[in-house]
Length: 448
Ligand SMILES: CC(=O)N[C@H]1[C@@H](OP(=O)(O)OP(=O)(O)OC[C@H]2O[C@@H](n3ccc(=O)[nH]c3=O)[C@H](O)[C@@H]2O)O[C@H](CO)[C@@H](O)[C@@H]1O
Ligand SMILES: C=C(OP(=O)(O)O)C(=O)O
Image (cartoon, rainbow, N blue to C red; front, side, top):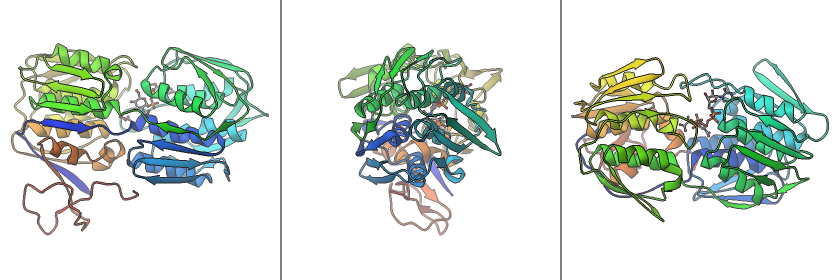
């Protein structure tokens, strides 16, 4: 058990570097299973717990995976089984992304159901509908899904009822080895879809139209390993941009790609923040009082649901009342209760939250209910009076590399402690005296 301790009141300034995108690297590692020849080298792979989990899934299937200095190598020439074990799949929803590659490569696969999570039920009907259209027979039972195809998958036209990121990726991967052409209509358009398509094309696939609503995949006989650079994490970048703004700071977010952050930049500018993108990153200057704005989450290029809680933190410190509407997930307001513990005034009305600005936030003991909620609570802690303690750090470790270190590099008063471990590896200078039962916790995940 560990927690972040944040003491409010410090203005963020300086430069911070964004890591590789979690939501790109996970499908890319899964797609490596399609490589029947050679090794894939995946550069800028962030050392996150989720990356470890998907790597373990691949290892359990017989692939050889190594990780060193943000580079992952995967050799999937010899897969020993096409059944993904429960113990790793249950840990993370994105593990389900191995289903498409395994079905394409082996002709059959069995994988445990990924289940729902704190932010919503997260069904997989669109993934399964796509596999069925490609000729697979699907059966469900005892917490497992089996998919079998009679010979090679066959290209098909698939219309997605929702522009699901995961379903688009899973179907795209399965279709790379299918016979004939597959088109995915109402496909998701996220930058991570484009990154996956680029990776697949590097492996020898023929994927066109990624980033638009219609993706066309021409099936090929075989794929091979390739070297690939993962795109920078737009949500991590957005989190630092919002953190800079909430503290009235001046921060350069190195590696942030403005094209991937259009909706956030537009909203921050509407709030009165100066956002200056250049070819290497984005500078954020917040030297005026923030104005309230309304925000509605939507599939890309709309405002990302993965930035909703961080945006809510920012709106708490703006002048006026804002309405935040969540349309992507049905239960992604769990952080509201935690903000309320910090003296925030927020009312939930259906899928919207009414946020009263100019909040006099006070430090409290709060819990990260999901990954982004954790980041948002830390942001609130940066401007709260007194000390905030954020537990539920395992959620934050899924998606942020060295968050406390990066924020303290910008001047934040934040550190991490463990009440159980006795690690002495310091990552941030403790701003309070260590006691017998609080020791500075190592930030690097244990598997690196
Ligand atoms: C690892 C990864 O990349 N995770 C991201 C991915 O998750 P993920 O790929 O799981 O999200 P989806 O785009 O699939 O989900 C969007 C919506 O579609 C619904 N849905 C999805 C699939 C399906 O078969 N049926 C269905 O109804 C979901 O319940 C949700 O309401 O996109 C989300 C939406 O941008 C982000 O919040 C996650 O960070
Ligand atoms: C919801 C998220 O991720 P996942 O889909 O992996 O749960 C996220 O990154 O905010």
